[in-house]
Length: 609
Image (cartoon, rainbow, N blue to C red; front, side, top):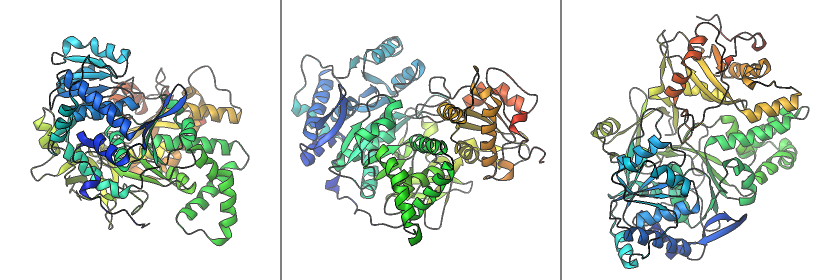
């Protein structure tokens, strides 16, 4: 699909540095609404001028507390409007922002604050402040621990703040973002003002937005993707609409927030599809009607709807598409997904409903963006073409290599890791495996370090099989295991809401124990395994699986704060279960082997060599 794209921005269309972004935006957008948020159960707005004034107060307070240019200032808070005001206040003071995930445990907090050399920590509330306080003796460089909104008796002069902000240069450090790695302690990625503004310069022409548009933000601002959305929205003059603070209410709140732009991880979009599909299946023949409606909707989205299907499309719009659009607020015209692969069925569902969804690719080390699908060039099933300023090539071993102004200068205090990440010619070694098609669209096929080599010498990419398994709405997470083993097996967790809903619709009474122990639930998982196996190569097919009693969480250390699976932690936690899948049947607190149960039927390819 080829559509027109906006022209590349002139230099005046982006601020000279991020320290001046609030000043720059206030000059251009004045009294337009910049931030929208909930206060006392009602929506409130802060204008661009109001945001500039709030940012100035934060910056002046920091200078009054002795913060010097290039000092590290940490922010420990949930996504909220105060995060944005603090963010730009720190930058305006000439300091370096160190985001800390609010879900981080003591060891991670101590590591990030200590390794970065943070001199000030700004916390959202007393509970987060208490977390830092009990670590204080391990942080000799920490001078101040303050709450958001707390100010010293006197503020520094406004002129001093503006002079500091104007003095920042493209090569100056803007932030140190600690990657939530799936193994080991997180590494601090150094990102400059120039890195981050290079991304803005390359992506602003591709994103249709401006005054009157509203971007709904629920993603953690400790993660770079949310910060990029923050920058883009405010540069374009849109409204940054913050979620109400309860992650479980996001879908319900969208109808009230009515955004035009919805950036998200795939999980949200997949949940919307699952809910609609569950409702459809509650009626006789509902699944067939749902599938046909999606098929017709995709034809319409592609502009190839046959005349004889127009009436059916109008009927489906009243019965399905329109209701989904209204559930998301009725105005979403641009949805962005990234951070993890999104199921093709989910993309088709959204497109059928008239919601354009674009997938992109990047990493913290590339300032967040390397490729992007956009209205000017989109190919579903890929993560788009390289944005302007990015060179991309595939190494002989299949690894994606990138070069450009977005690529970071290195890891904090880790020259060895920096040399491994960026070679002498400036190529960033992403660690991802991928393929470029003839038109330059990139497809990510897996992680290099996750590659599984069976005892028979077969190279398998687990993410392909895992995504196929997670296409089932009853499966929450799937981890494929099989390195140096004769064949792959899987550890699977359940989507509790979907299983409970299925049981209610089917008149199934689940017992007192975990649903993973119920043969009928394990039969659902077996269906998911069968469906996934039908889509992957023979060596990559799952021969056996265990359904675990509980889902993975950030709190139990099995997910990163950005919700990526810590593969090594999972396989270590469930080592006994894995051994059982390759040997004797294992029963215990971790769940049971699903495919071994008679109710689950025969395992696919059970006798295959």
